[in-house]
Image (cartoon, rainbow, N blue to C red; front, side):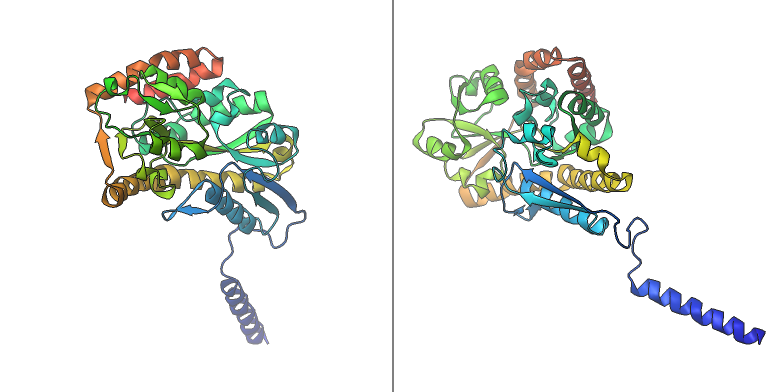
Length: 352
């Protein structure tokens, strides 16, 4: 009788193990079925498609993060993605998420400068970091993100889940830039903060919508623009702008993920962790993999398909470009106590 009991127990154990293995060994954090489903909306400031040259674009980053979150929460946190202007105009979306009219947005610092001064520094310092990897150390390896997070929570009632990268942000021009004097008197399409940078370099900023810059470059209305180099291929900008200046103005044009503070606090801790982990995973990928790869593709294909030249500034010239924008660093540093900390961290990292 005892022997039969032992064999029966063994059979139950084997069957149980087989059942677990056949289920695919689901992660410990996954729930069989969520007791409550959180249905959110997120609006992206970037339009489809999801991928550019094999890598997630801004819209794709949003879509992929939301897919992973839904899967890991077993549908407990289901975030529906909307393209730009579908629910709110891009510049109105930050206020909409603050008021709770939408739970989440994917946006960028330049759209938030009128809301909080710290947004001026979300991309780091112009001519601060030289590479996406250096910017990754700033965003992922210092207190930079946590300080920005405090500023957004206190001044805009949103939770900054994290920052990812679109790519670098460079001068794309009709003329080569080998020294600072080459920009003097040149007309550069630039708005907002970018216009101040262009002016600091001796150029004449021209305010144009992004959709208008191709024709303006083609006609010679402007001599250059500030834009991610991969746009030279995806938007065919390299047909009319045959020169790219390196190192970039900004090593990474950051994308932010903002959640209404009340909506964030209503989420179970488990779901908060999952959302934050997925954004952090995407951040690491964009800063360390896709950003550098998109830059390389832009240089290689830009030259082979469009005859584009990439001009690298000598260290002595880079120092001049940096020196020219340092008054902006100092101006932004004075905006708030948080700005003081953000500029300090950026400067210290740049010295290493």
